[in-house]
Length: 622
Image (cartoon, rainbow, N blue to C red; front, side, top):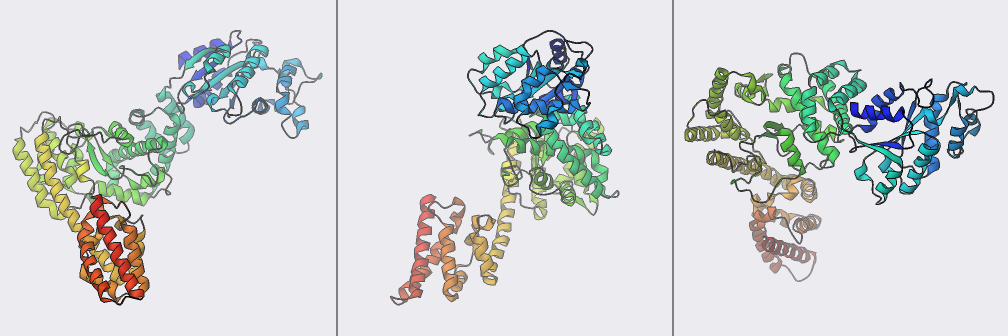
């Protein structure tokens, strides 16, 4: 920043008839720097015209202004607070230049008193040559005001009135083709704003959070970590301020809610960096427009993932790098979470994306799930895994590292780790040049046996096959794929068992509360409306239910099936085709037994037609 300050100092202390432009990306901190640093420096510099006086900086946002008169009004209103001293008046020159803007104001008599008159000492006048006008948001003018008019106005200020003008802009966002030609008329120096993020961080946290001493201390202690994490993706100070402001609520609420005896207190050095990292990750994506409270594409599916380039490189599950699956969300995730565990915290996500107020109890529950806390204690297996995780592992010496790695393997063979950790176990065991001299085939076999042994206690993980991707360039590719495949098979069995239980509940629902069943099956926001729940239904029982129901219920069932299988039905529903074909057979048989007239025949014919159409559409689509 010294170079920028020196240029501004030279500009203000020498005669000039041009403006200075400070350009840089949106949110990089240009406005913040001017208001909090540069303005104070300017106030200490004697004016070029009169060394007895010092410059008075004002900042004007051009955002949305549509006429020169509106700009003049904004300049006048910015100067007005300087004129509280009744002996200070506007010089005739400045008053004349701003008169059009002032006339736009109501209560002209009040403002008219501040213009110079014969009774005022000229030494007390404020003239243009002692004012530094900073025009902000240069690229955000209203479409009604042309760039030609604005530059013409600024040119009159710097040439006719000898005013010092500083322009803050993002030149990359200025559209008019003739801008650079016009710029040459008024801009003498154009300075690229390169933010000193470290100094800006110190300034903004003291400015924003001095009233929260505990949080301020946390930010100061974790400054390096926060800056390094944030700057992997962005240097936008507005976004950083947004994230830190929201995290202050998270930090304070969590601290107030958690009891002093809670086991989580012992793990705060691990927990807090993980929480601020997730807040940074979520805040960045939210401000990029990639996620929202409802739009959670992929971000919550990958719940606990180790982002390690040893076994993760966004390759397909068989190691082939087919089509690129990475979108912006995944790219940001790779930057923020490379060589680290990604943990999704719904309570933080919902709060940061504006969906709910922050729920500290929800966060405490999520942390205890992540750390495998039971009865206010962390299971020994996960306590060991935590010690071996990045970056905590670097605290260990070689002897301790070997000791804990052996413990981890013993727990793995007993089935004490979940499916999600299977590749982590292998990678942690062989990293750092395999210090235990493990046989890779035996290691693979032991991990798989442990998975099978612990299968009864595992929960189904919806995105496991996606999360356990294997890098085709890994030296342990074959072993990792074998472990992955074993975990996926176990997970699929867990999924089938879970579906069967869930689908059985849905089947019982239509018998106990048909209206609730109908509502859920018809609501696209309810998962069962998009799942193949009918594949496990007992066809005979469902048909008998239809047979015994009144006409209104029959008609609702017909409409439900019609909506369920549109012209292009989801391939997810393909397993339901056997149910539909068997039901169709029974419906056709019943229709043939009815008389040629009446509501009953109409309903059964409709029922039959909808089922035929559904079967045809599923076959054609798949």
